[in-house]
Amino acid sequence: QVQLVESGGGLVQPGGSLRLSCAVSGFSFYYYTVGWFRQAPGKEREGVSCIRNPDGRAFYVDSVKGRFTISRDKSTVYLQMSNLKPEDTAVYYCARSRSSSSGSLDPAQYNYWGQGTQVTVSS
Image (tube, rainbow, N blue to C red; front, top):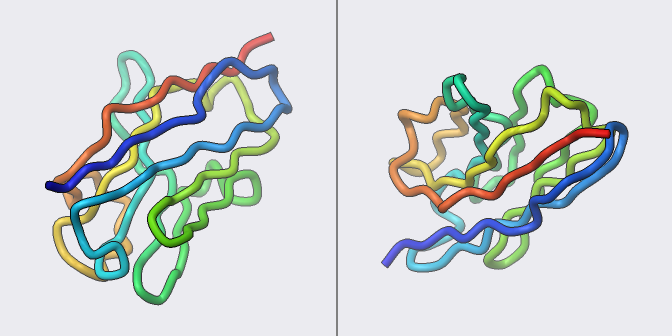
């Protein structure tokens, strides 16, 4: 059974940092892309970052380049978020791609999702 479980969200002041974790199980981790997405109230879900396996290449949406870093270990994908801004406030989800080696930030290319974790950036 494919499972993705996010953790690490919370309330942080502008300029602060958070690290999100996505624990994955039930599939061969090194043969799929795992991505982070976010959805703010009233907005569509957008791709933030993904890491393509097995080569480990990372992809980012322009708005987070230089501030967010995606990484992985044996069974967890991390999203280190720094210099957070109020516009980063959203529910963050991790997801597994439909096919191997996609490297895509399009939510339609993902078919397994976690339950989400809230990130709020506010003073």
